[in-house]
Length: 509
Image (cartoon, rainbow, N blue to C red; front, side):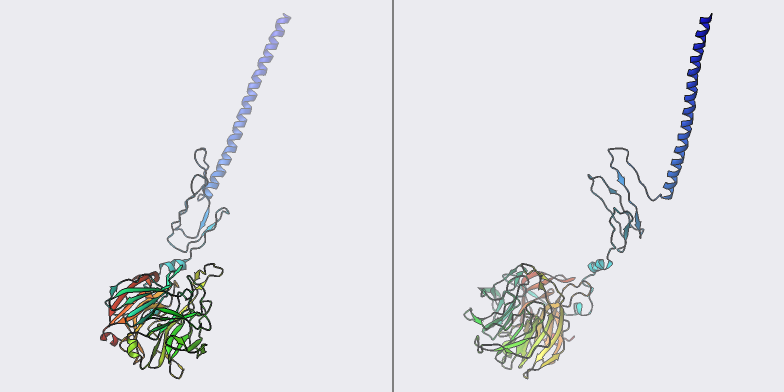
C-alpha cells in the first residue's frame, strides 16, 4: 500500500509542474504582445505626425534590390513656376535636370549641402542676345536713302579685307589684304575697266606690309608706306616702296620715321604727306604728320620732315587732295589715293587737303599669343572732316551723316563731289558689336555739305572703289550677315557697279 501511494504522489507533482509552466508561458506571451502593440502604435503615430507636418518632403526607400534607390532633395523655390525633377543616384542612369522657367530672374537656393546652388539668371545677358539688330536708332540705324540699281561684275580672283586700291587710267590696282585672319595676300590683282575683266597679277616685295597700308599715286608711280606685316594682329613695319605701273617694277623708298597702321597718305604740293594711323601697339591713335619731297617715283630728300599734327588721330580714313591742275585727272582717279589714317579718307581739292572719318583704337594682339591673335579693344568711330589749307592750318568742316571708318579706299570723285561707299559706324549701344555701313555718301565740294544718295547691295567695309565712264565700281571687303543684321561676317571679292546721274547730286539730307 505504501508503494502505490508514493507513485501516485510523484505523478501528480509532475503534472502540476507542467501545467504551471504552460500558464506562466502564456502569461508572458500575452504581456509581450501587449507591450509590442503599444510601442508600435506610438512609433507609427509619431511617424504619421511627422509626415503630416512635412508633406512636401517624400523619402521613399526601395525594398527591391532590382529597383534603384531614389533620394529627393528639398529645394527652396523663390518662384512657383519652376519644376525640378528628382536626381537619380544610380550610376547606370544619367542625371536628369529639368527646369521649366517662364521667367529669367528665377533663383534656386539649395537647402541641402549636397546640391549646388543655382545662380540667378542674368536678364541683361538674355536681353542682349534678343536685341534685334534692326532696332537701331540715330547714328546706329540705316539712314533713309534711295535705291540704286547695282550690276554685278566679274568677281575678284581672291576675297580681300583691309586691302587697298589705286586707279591709274583705266586700270584698278588692288593690293594685298587679308584672305582670312590667318592668311594675307602678297600680290596685286588688276581690273581693266575697258573690257571689265581681271587681266593681270604680280607679286609685292617680300618685305612689304600686307594690310593697313598707306598708299597714294601720282598717276604713274604708286607709293606704299608702312602698314602691318603678316596675319592676325602682327606688328607694323616702317618700310616703304614705290611701284612703277608702266614697268611693274618695285623700288625701295625711305622708311617712315615710325611704323604706323593704316596712315592717311596723299601727295600735296610736290610732297608725300603721311599722318595719323595707329601706333606700334595697334590701338593708340597717332597724330604725327610727316612729309617728304617726291618726283617721278623718287624721294628728293633723305629724311622725312615733321609737319603740323592732325587734330584727331587714328586709322581707316579717307584723305583726298585736289589741285587746280589735277581736277580732270582726279575725276577718273588716275592719281588719287585712299587715306587710311585709321581708316579715313584723305583728299586734296584746289590746293586743300581733306581728311574724312576714321576711328580711335583698334584690335590688338592678345598678350602672350605666339601668333599675335587679334583681341578686340574699345574703339571710337567718328565722322569728323578736317581741311588743311595752303597756309598749313586745319579747319573743321561739317561731319559725315554718321560716324564712318574703314573707308580709306572707298571713295571716288564725281561731279564736283566726293562719293564714299560703306564702312563701319559706332558699335551697337547694347550688344557692343560692330555695325557695318550700307549707305553711299556724297560730299559737295562747292557747299561743303553732305547728302545720302543711295544704298549698296549690302553693308560692307573696306571696299575698293573706282570710277570709269560714268560708272562707280567697288569690290572686296567684309559684308554683313544679312538685311536685318549689320554685323560683319564674310570676306568677299565681288565686284559691283552703278550708273550715277546728275539727279543724285541734288539730293540733300
